[in-house]
Every structure is written in C-alpha cells, then in structure tokens.
Amino acid sequence: MAHPPFFYLLLKPWVYIVGSSMSGLRVFTVALSIAAIMPLLVLCRELHLRIREIALASSLMAVNNYLILYSYYLRPYSLLLFLTLSSHVAFVRFLRHEESDKRRALLILVEVNIPFVYTHYFAWLVVAAPYLWVAFMERRRLRRFTAATPDDSVAPSASSQ
Image (cartoon, rainbow, N blue to C red; front, side, top):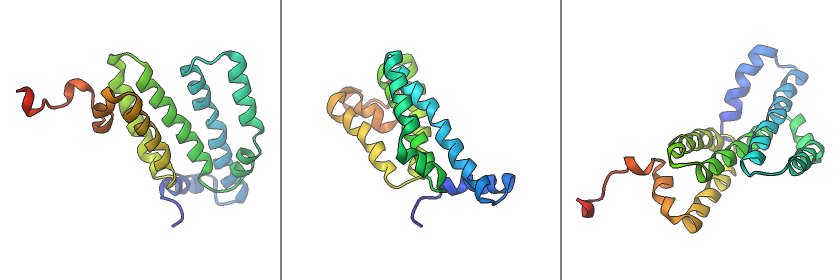
C-alpha cells in the first residue's frame, strides 16, 4: 500500500452511507478540507494572532491551488492537513497552558498523533518536529513529553529514594 490504512478505514463507512459514485466520494475529501479550517482558526487563536493575520491565513488557505486540487482527489491529503493542524494545536496548547491543563493537552496530542501516523508515512516528520523542539528548547519537559505522562505521575528514580 502507498499509504497507511486510516484514511481507507474512514472511507469505507462513507461508501456505505453515500454510495460509490465519484461525486459522493469527492464530498468526503472536500468535507475534510473544509473541516481543516477549524483547527487553523484554533491554531491562530492559540498563537494570539490578530484578526488581520487570521483573515490572511484563512484567505491563503482558501485560494491555495494545491489544497483545492487535492481536495477533489480521493487521496488522504485532506485528512493529513486536518490532522497536521490538529497536532500543532495540541502541541501549542501543551506548551502554553498551565500545569493543570498539561495532562489534557498531552493526552489530546497523543490521541491526534496516533491516527495521524496511520494516515500518511510523512506524518512521522510532523510528529518528530515538536519532539525535537522540546528536546532542544524545553529540555525540562522532555521526560514528560517522551513518556506522554504528567510530571507527578512519572515514577521516582532510584537515586531519589
């Protein structure tokens, strides 16, 4: 297979619901492309962008020839875009929120990244980028990020006992 199976697992029930006509199948990928606007807006909000910047990002996404072209093909690129933006939202929330929200943000990041890597092989690069950023810029959070656990639930080391 050229791609991991998650896109096809979502497509299978869609075919049962709307049928296997080409227009019905294209609605699935177009709907995923339109749904990708929501994580884009949430990401812009998490990054505290101004309204003008959010409007520019949304406009560029709306007229991007690549995004429009591949939203009409029955390929996993629309789902890949949606999950990429969702993964970035979860990562920014992990970095920016208070300690009480870190556990939830980390759990959401893991829950988004699992289907993400089962959508496209290059998703591993997007998953690795935040990990490398934490490894070099936020070294104190590396253990929690690697184990995907909050600080208080990590088992104490033998030297601290």
